[in-house]
Length: 459
Image 1 (cartoon, rainbow, N blue to C red):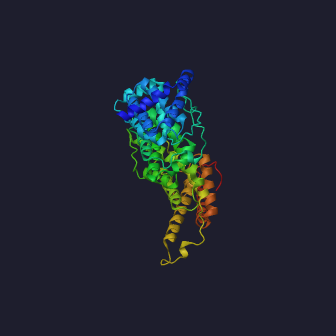
Image 2: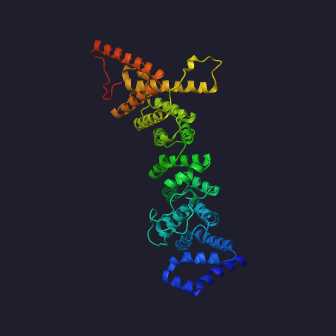
């Protein structure tokens, strides 16, 4: 339309200005940020200049050509260098970045787009530039970014903006959240875009610190679930690294673990063995996430206690004699480490035994207290059985720990339980010791009896 034509004419006239023309001739593309700034500042309709330029960039980029990608990359990078005040990040994303990003991840002609990204440095750099918008960082105009045409160097082209919260978009735009979640779906055809998103945004400590915690619960759960599934089904190390680096809450991790345990997340694969392996991998990565975050969890919280309870349930199921899937021992040890990390942090001991309370006086908190004490008792029983082996009264129901390290972890967990929930745990250990003594005396009387030898610490 006429207004758009006038906007383009204004840009052209500024470029022909003797002073600006001289800069362009001397500095080439490096003069582009200064040109854009001059045009926007001089215009009576700066929004029209910005919107017209962004619309043209969107149209050119959606043609998916190497030359077009190079041209749009130059303009987008110049806008970054010009700064957020001249070219607001939210406007760049809304008018151009969003449509280009969605067109790439939802491309019907997957082969054509993949071929373009693999063979055109400019196209790949354009994807990186657009993904960088999803980080939500407002460039301050003093960025060290330079307009380059050489090989991609993701980590080298970063902002020099610090970690001040004011430099991030807040609230984080809804359409940005939707694009991040959509990119992590297993149906996303362009894997290189997923990798770029994880490398530039999701694995960024500043994004995890300043943006992720402020996202709504559903978005956070969608992101963490997407990363977990990419790790399990795609074997993505970047997904694992990104998930471990996120500031996930105990509630989010509890939801993920509950969904895995109840088979609410589809882990099915070509065979029963592969399906079982997928579930074990999922349990292992969530156990590692919880272990990394345990120190930040509150010492008394229902979700944290529920996490312990669910891990105890999983460890018990994996320790059944009939469960011997490949990788199960590694997962058992990982869960055991996580249980140890959690019991170190939570406050277990109570001031009053629930048995002393009458049925009429038991409140909701009293009921929770009873449930937690039952959980500690179950954990203590399981740890004793895992350590005692054939000497345990329930040996036929439990597959004992194998490695010395796993036994040391179990002993350490029992030791902490003794100090934090002594009234519950110590009697069970005394009973277990009596069972071991009785078992050993039986062995002495029967020379043909076999004894499982342990190299771990004595209980």
